[in-house]
Image (cartoon, rainbow, N blue to C red):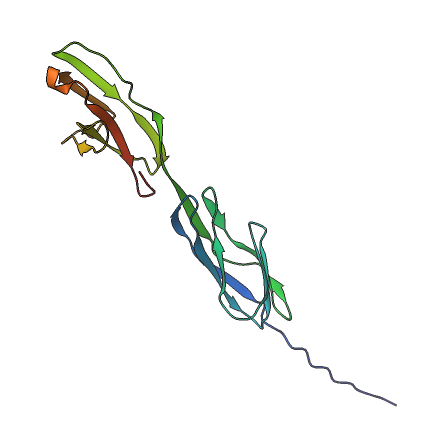
Length: 176
């Protein structure tokens, strides 16, 4: 007596998650990343920074990130209703910072017709540009000193400069 039995094996494609997005932000801001998904949803998407998105109903999986330092994001695993896989691709979020004065110019007293050098410095990413300014109204308003864009400003003080205020204004794409 013989008997036969038939079975069907179905191979399911493993899900994929392809990461895209990234860019440059200023500290405290955010941007969106996404992972294009294949397979049969809903999906569970685990990111390299420990965030897990569950029950993702549609592709792409999108999320907002606000890192404090430059960070590379990847998908470490993606699960659909049948299978699991690792992700591909990455998104780098570069974090820039606003200028912070690290060396302020010092007030000084000099004799008339004497050379004066004022020096200032600031940190920030990208490196901030500097513009020296002068105020003749006690600091209520400042005007740019034409061509004075280096860390030091040197001039010969004359009697008419008495009481003027000078400052270095540092600027980059994240602030002043």
